[in-house]
Structure formats: structure tokens, C-alpha cells
Image 1 (cartoon, rainbow, N blue to C red):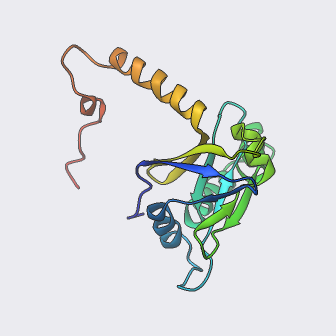
Image 2 (image 1 turned 90 degrees about the vertical axis):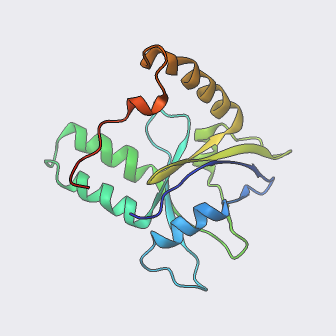
Length: 173
């Protein structure tokens, strides 16, 4: 996939559960929807399964199909396959972006991210993660980010830059 989800964007979910999808994310979603053409509504999938996560994860249509193919390669009846099917496919919802660039955040996604009382709106974060994006409640995102950054030093030797964590480049590229 040539397009990637990058950046973090604070967006407010209004009292009607509507939120604007960042414009750069909309371009990636459009590129990842083989059925999209100008004038049509681009589609994507929000996954709200996986109890270990505090966020919902957004996949392009191409991305979710790639995940589905990986799950289909697993043995029928396998517990890992059942867990993946349930958490990544059953607990997901296909959404369309409207002509104003918004989606309506489904109730189960709102419950997942802790955005249940919309009376005054809820601050969320769209966080890019290469081939997917994450939708967080802003407070949970900020807490997770602070924890991640505090632990980054444990991964590095003195004086190392974060880029030192990357594997060596493949010489064939």
C-alpha cells in the first residue's frame, strides 16, 4: 500500500455522534476502497474488538480483506482463529464517510473508547499507524502516549536515537 495513515488529529464527536475524519485519512481510505470513485462515499471498517485495547482500529477495505485472508489461512476450529474472527471481524463495523467528511460513530465503538456521554461532545484522537489508524478518547490517548514515551528510554542505550530501534534495511530494496 503506497498510502499510509500518519499523524494525530484531535476531533470532537458531537452530540449526534458525528465526527470529521481527518482529510489526509480520507485520502488513504479512498485509495484503499477499490469500489470508490469521486462522488461515491468511501468505505472503511472500524474494529472495536480485542479487550486489551482502549481504542478502535480503522482499516481500509483493502486492509481488512488482507486481514481476512490471513485469518482464512488458519485451521478451521482453531481457538486462535475463532478469537481473531470474533475480535477482528464480528466486533467490527463497515462505515461510509458522508459528503461532509464525517462518520457517525457507532454506539459499540463509543462504548469501546469511553465516549458514551455525548451531551457536551467528546474529544477524540485519530492516530495514524501506517496501514491502520486508531480512534481514541483523547484522555486515554494522552495517558497511553505519556506512558509510551516514558518507557522509550528503557529501550535505548545511552545516547541512542529512537531510529536505532529499526532493523537494518534490506539490501535488496
